[in-house]
Image (cartoon, rainbow, N blue to C red; front, side, top):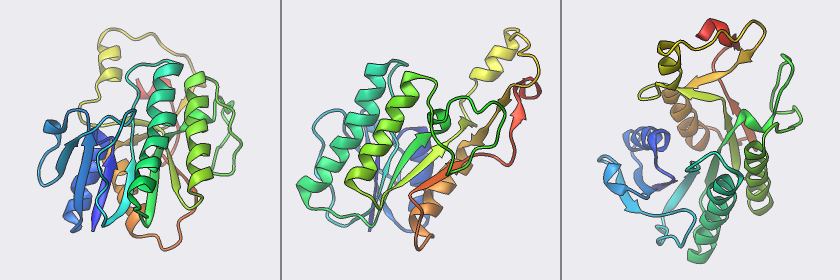
Length: 220
């Protein structure tokens, strides 16, 4: 059985290694396939363009795309067009995976004013990029109602030093009251594998966050 990771960057690669350890054959689509380590198989693919053939035995598809820059056009190309292209490729090749999971973001919620959010909370993106990601979720569920959306909070972990760099550079005190939610890359990868392989009847939507929100001041 094959797992296809469409957008096999850092998170996709970590999830892929876990799939491989569980006995799956893993194919990673990425613009730079040479960056994908063994035992994964890397294949050159740009999710915004024409895509390679999908293996006939593909059981799981993980769509884990990323925009090249923080603009509406870049997000629309990566998330909306990229997701549509992956679904088009599955239809083109007559492949019907048992599980499809789309990696989304809690940015679709906007500012909750310190309140609690869960899978039933309404979305109200505060940014155009968050709105585009929400549009991609709708597109996915319109075409594959059985697909899963995993909304991840801010990812931290190996190689992600932006916040550390800001502190070293003398980041300003954000004051009190600003809550932040995060998830470690390895936990996010483990969640992707668990939801696609170990849940008999998955829900259409999950949130992926650490155990509790924390003030940005405390994180800094």
